[in-house]
Length: 223
Image 1 (tube, helix red, strand yellow):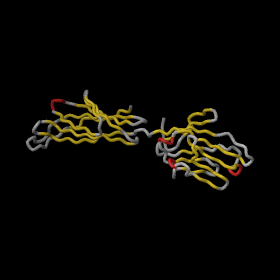
Image 2 (tube, rainbow, N blue to C red; image 1 turned 60 degrees about the vertical axis):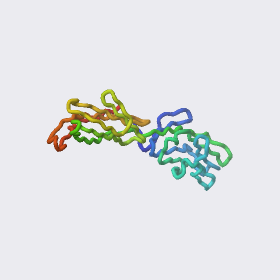
Image 3 (tube, one colour; image 1 turned 90 degrees about the vertical axis):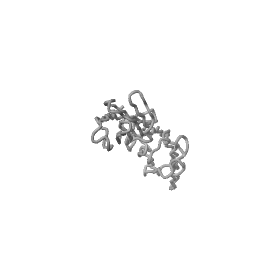
Image 4 (cartoon, helix red, strand yellow; image 1 turned 135 degrees about the horizontal axis):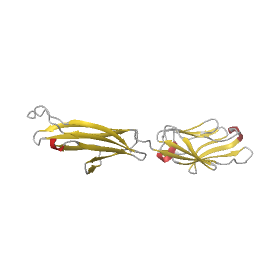
């Protein structure tokens, strides 16, 4: 499932419709007034989890009834409600209620909104290699980064060892051959990994320290 800037209808539940949206995106909640006009009502309200968040009484309109949504709500001419800069805590039930000028109520229209974190779209590893002439090993420093997702966590796997950090520092001797390290970035919506295979191959004049490790391969693994 792809989450973009706008929400989309997923499924009907009787009089309730379910929408999905992504963090930071925008969603429009339709008023579903049918053939009625806003002028036909004594008042119209939008509620979030049974708390008023926007309302219209005659010619008076207020969209700042709830601190959580301050500055992020906009009402259209037909009383449809737009929520901008979506947050995870915006997930919940939204209700459009109204009382007509003749004192009769119209059926409450309910929308269940689920806001998701965006998925991680890419992972990459930055590397630095230096020769340690005293120990005859390569010092390897790796930094794992990602894009797309919010609040990612990072884990490394090298042989039978694991670690939880965006940085990894270790020493590698030429006799160890190829060593593959995997960095995995994860958040609530997805996870993605990247492999990085290195081999310490001394080159140049070891007496001056002009020796380095050679990067062998690099590949994506999407999980």
